Length: 359
Image 1 (tube, rainbow, N blue to C red):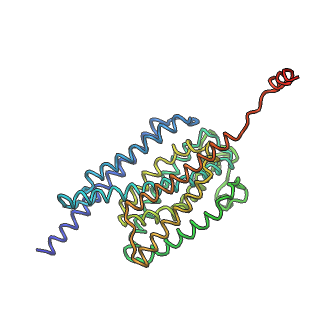
Image 2 (cartoon, one colour):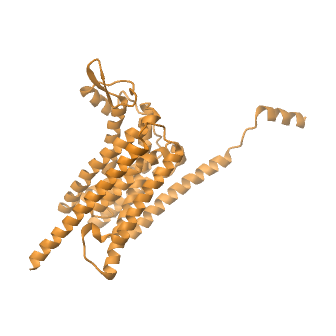
Image 3 (cartoon, one colour):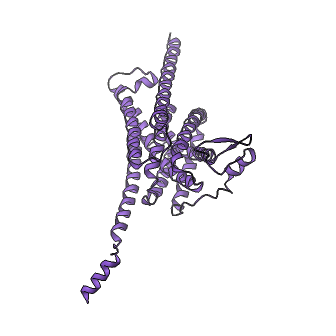
């Protein structure tokens, strides 16, 4: 009976997780369809106001999911708990999700700045930014789904895999800290490795042809700069995922929580891109904060894996919020001080009047 009960419990959990995952993916597809098919049917330049509204929408949806886990989190894995145990389980699950969401959201800011440089380097029309970002994020959702569950299987089979990623995150954080003063540079579009690779297999056009990804000219198919930039963005997202996804595994070993927090964070990446596109120079210490964040997460993974010293989820959440808050606050304070330090120059006519009065 005991063995039969264990099998039934396992079957119930798998059924609950599968149903939950299908519903979640359905929700994501529905929201993306509304975004592209209803709200953004026509290519246009996204205004700051529109970007702020959509950023609020995506953050709001992510927080609603947090509240769902806080009050009904047991539905994810189909666990049967009561009383204080159920309350503690819900709270831990929701805190793990919220912490993972903040980690991915923070690290995605650096990814956004790289995307901005890619768009500027390839001189993409701003009307087509949203289209490229939409398909780029859709590809990122599919890629990260496979990466997260594959990494989860590896971690559960070989625990030392997390040690490797912990060391990688610690190294990346230290390296980013030393390279924090390096300014972002425009990309040499001719020497970029992805451009060279694509040119070996496809013909490229120099114009966007009305926002199309490919076009047929003189009986032959060509790909436009829009599709080329999309490929480059997908490649850069793979690199960033190598840092961000293992970082969330430092908080939780639940692949579903890792996936949900990751996806909700990158779904709001498009709107956040347009909010931050004009603020690259205002976050002077953000890179320092991200470097400290990566180093903290890497050290946390190594402490747990090698020395069996665990840092609780609430403490990790407070540390992450503190690191980000200090770096953003210091950046804004620096901007304010620089603004105050500028003495406004009077117009020429005003200077002439002042000179006449003085004389």
